[in-house]
Length: 429
Image 1 (cartoon, one colour):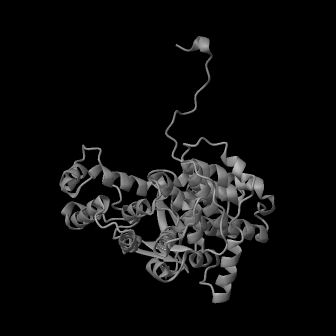
Image 2: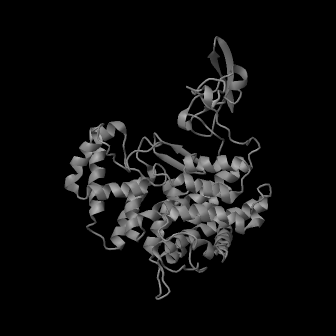
Image 3: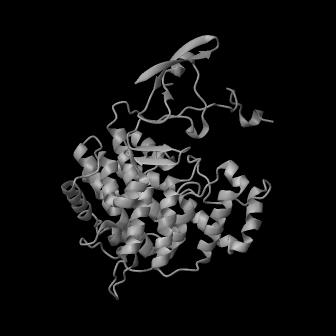
């Protein structure tokens, strides 16, 4: 459904189509604006620009709503599992029992990586950041799986999608093992997706490893919460890379590289470091005063969100999950959690935070949970990438199949020197 709006430019009326979505804000179609007026729009960060049409994820930041294919995130996290969410994001509907069994089977049977990948890892220094390893290894998959790089073939696109969802936990676990100097642990097909990942991370050849179901379920829920988040920086990067016709492995590697930024995927690591810096609840008032001081460089990490102007719906689920994990592990007096809980209560009541709508976000709790599970902070963003892979793939697939898709080409407002003539070195003053 669409209507029209009129824009006046230099006393000339320009008709622009207004398109309406299923829910959410309508958009003004400015694709012909330059042709009609000779002008571009100016929107740094594209925060007021819809870069594509999508049926995958919907966010209402003012109301604190996150929907995957129409399903509220809390319902999916509470009642489903990660692979069910993967199926939903990829195919648009929740699977039947038979479809889920088939999907789970296909993912499980793709978890092994080419054996030569083992040698690829030895090229890295042992102290290499796991995200650096992930960027390289995922990009290198196109060198190992030539039979799934033709993006014009729907079957090859499907095979590449399944491979990345299946192999990402294996590569992430290998990055972790290499980082800590332990031997790689191969996947085990009788375990579910998340339990398999935990075993690959924490098992050692010297003894049997039994997966804790509470931790497995908690991590599975974390994966669901991070599976997709509309047109964020890394997803937009994947779409932009894909618009050139790049192979899917290269596109996902580009997404991982973008996710590595501290303003994006590294936020949970930054939130944990902040809690460690505060140290004890009695120091919270001092740090809140620092946060309010415009001249102080200190910033409270894990509060507020670029999109959510309400309580992050994922944070509510993450808070409950954090308590479950700490209780299971017998961590009753965790100083980080004490600081986090006290900080949350103060921030929810303090006029400064309420007025600015600085509610706790998912990063506020996820860092504590992952640390309690035994993951070092350097692995936090890797786990984020593992979970977000399915969202990237779903968005990439949707873009490839969109008949209106064209190569991305943002424009600019040029403020440099006007045209000028070259002068030789001898003539320059």
